[in-house]
Amino acid sequence: MAVAAPGQSLGRGMLAVGLVGYVIGALVGWWLALRLIPPELSVTVLGRTLHTASAHAHLNNIFLVFLLLPTVLGVEAAVVGWPRSSLRQLLFARTPSLNTDLTVFVLGQGHVLDIVGRVLMLGASMISGAWVHEAIRVRAGLDLGPPELPFVLQLPLYFAIYSFFDYWTHRIDHTKNFWPLHRYHHSAEDFAVVTSVRQHPAAFTAVFVVNLPLAVLGAPPDVMIYVNVLVIAIGFLVHSKIDADWGWVGRWLIQSPNHHRAHHKLDMTHPTGHFAVAPIWDRLFGTWYEDKPDPNLAIGVDTPYRHGVFVPRDMARDYAHFWLGWLGRPNDGPSSDFGIFRRR
Ligand SMILES: [Zn+2]
Ligand SMILES: [Zn+2]
Image (cartoon, rainbow, N blue to C red; front, side, top):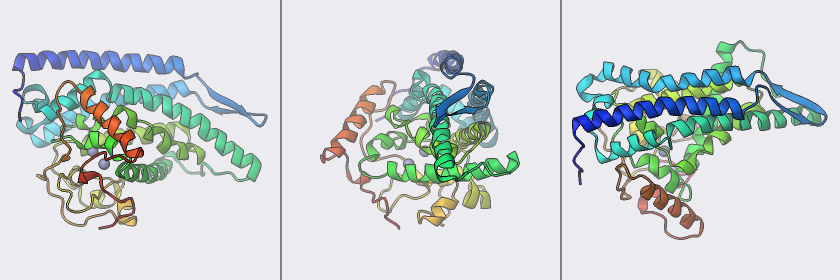
């Protein structure tokens, strides 16, 4: 049931409000992060004081992330043309599902909070990771890293480690008990770049979980930040309307938009695949599908969503479903019935 899109002038007005809110949100998030995170992250453990070098310099890099979205929207419009672009659709032809994406974005429940959350959780991951790293070095005499590698090689190394942990977090998201929170992301009926930020607010902890192993393995803070920037950029691209499978890159190194669409498939008659930002993990752990992904595949979930600008309703329902699942009560239809070790 389609809801009439608001008039074009209202659309432009909302976009202007959204963009102003976005810039203000970005500045506030940046300012807050600078205040909340000390210039030097340090913790004393076992009589030693650990430092991560100049945290504030790296926060400035995180601010770069806020330039990614406008960039990807521009690139997508250049590739697919203005009539099919997400930007035009967001401005003039929003569906209820897109209204949800945009609302999550404008409210700051997605991107802005996500980025602030990422900054804070990166800080938490760095401190606790450095603590574990040092404890292992002192107690077991084992230095886990970082390896003596130039930056250009550290980035792919730690991207591989990040994507490994991200892969398994994502597969856990698709198990029956965790699915209701991740389902909110999968409820999108179309991609429009910002769909990447459509996340249930209770699902943000993955950032901490995924980054912690990097810090334990001694990833330098700037490498951790660049890995996160790369992952956010890939997130925007795979939720774009670009029809591409990126050849061997999409088959081995970095997930393509068409493969991510296959991950979002509505049809649940066969198991879900393509969980990984780096397809190598899908290949190694049995969730890779060789079939050429269909750029016009229907996406979404069969759980009913009301969508639209009033997002708390669906979010609250999904949060309740999450806890009902842990209490052994039904929390969804058949679409959540994935076994974590199920192979095709
Ligand atoms: Zn998923
Ligand atoms: Zn997605």
